[in-house]
Image 1 (tube, rainbow, N blue to C red):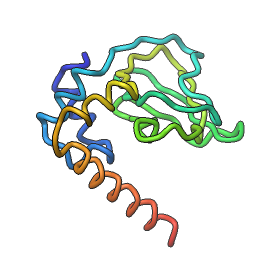
Image 2 (cartoon, rainbow, N blue to C red):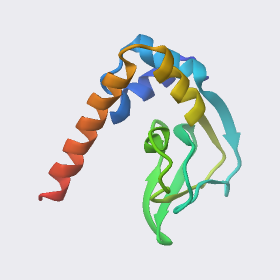
Image 3 (cartoon, one colour):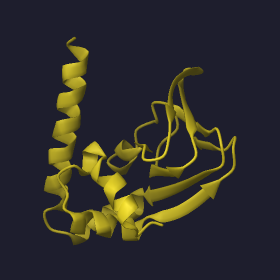
Image 4 (tube, rainbow, N blue to C red):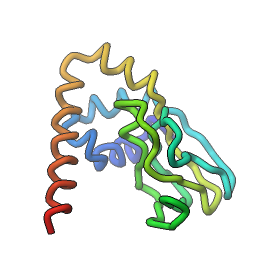
Length: 141
């Protein structure tokens, strides 16, 4: 699954990767791993350091902060992309509600792409700027 056009399409919708070309996204997809988990599996824990980024291929997950449900994620949703950029604590807990198929990209694999592909980091900065703008616009309502 990690190399499919569907996964590349999912990646193109992630704000961090919004300025990347299909070729860049195909490289990211090749470095990712296809993972299946059972319902109830804790994927990330609030307050712990993050090391992976996830894209949901199938199934659903519950997102909670301070023990309170804040969202449900479904196929096509992505989470954890900031963990690719730094080792700050996760800001939410994500638990599989159903059996899930995920595509997972680790921090080490991601760093390798940045080191090997000239211009990739600049594209990521563009994506981060878009994400910051969106967050800023949302906080000024």
